[in-house]
Image 1 (cartoon, one colour):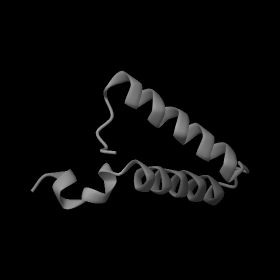
Image 2 (cartoon, rainbow, N blue to C red):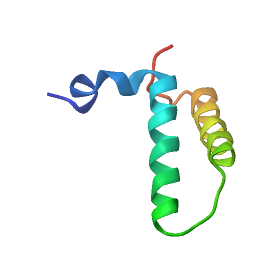
Image 3 (cartoon, helix red, strand yellow):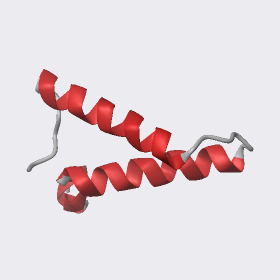
Length: 61
């Protein structure tokens, strides 16, 4: 079984974005790095848009 067959929700952009934001925010909080969640959301959105424009995105709409 392939990774995306096992976790089909990761192909949804909104779910993937939420998982990435939560993971980055919690990891940084554990390391006592103070970064706002809004800033992380902006960064994740920018990266996902870049990947989508380059055609290297793997999520479906």
